[in-house]
Length: 165
Ligand SMILES: Cc1cc2nc3c(=O)[nH]c(=O)nc-3n(C[C@H](O)[C@H](O)[C@H](O)COP(=O)(O)OP(=O)(O)OC[C@H]3O[C@@H](n4cnc5c(N)ncnc54)[C@H](O)[C@@H]3O)c2cc1C
Image (tube, rainbow, N blue to C red; front, side):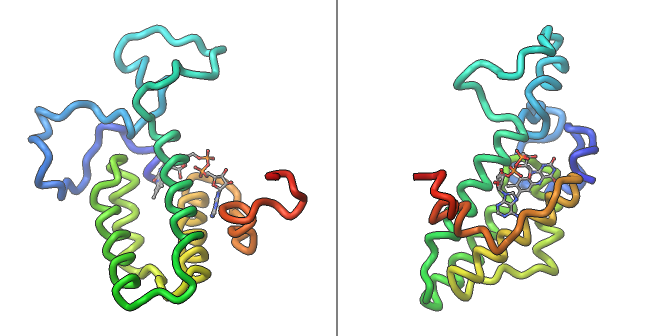
């Protein structure tokens, strides 16, 4: 499981634009804030739940923010995309998987994409595809599945109980 791997481990470094491993900075987006602080010999108050504002993202924040973007992008994708839009979205997803800055997450994602082709046929299909992708990661991390019939409530329309205003 990616989460359990050493945060500085690089299995298949296909990132030709990156410096040699010996020159690389440790990967902040591959770990969580408290672990990162401890790795650098800084004391961490275990009772303090929040890190200071406006700091670089850790793995969890990067994940949450990225999923927000991906699901929202799918929620506003056209119902009837042109052929160019369908192809562009597929290209975007494959390029995203090359540059997502949590390297072991990205490596697992590329592996997943090899057999799980993005469905860019319509807004509905793309939203469901991202929901399934996210559930694959949820399962890998031992988290419960999200009910994919509720993606529009979560990411576009707001909950039916009116709690989102
Ligand atoms: C492409 C990608 C790959 C990742 N791979 C890894 C990895 O290999 N290892 C690792 O440790 N972390 C990985 N992450 C980060 C991980 O998925 C979480 O973002 C992080 O653990 C924080 O989880 P969370 O419980 O706060 O909610 P998140 O999983 O970030 O979810 C945010 C919100 O999305 C909604 N949601 C949850 N599931 C779904 C779904 N299926 N469809 C629609 N909405 C949903 C919920 O409302 C939830 O509160 C990855 C992130 C991304 C974007």
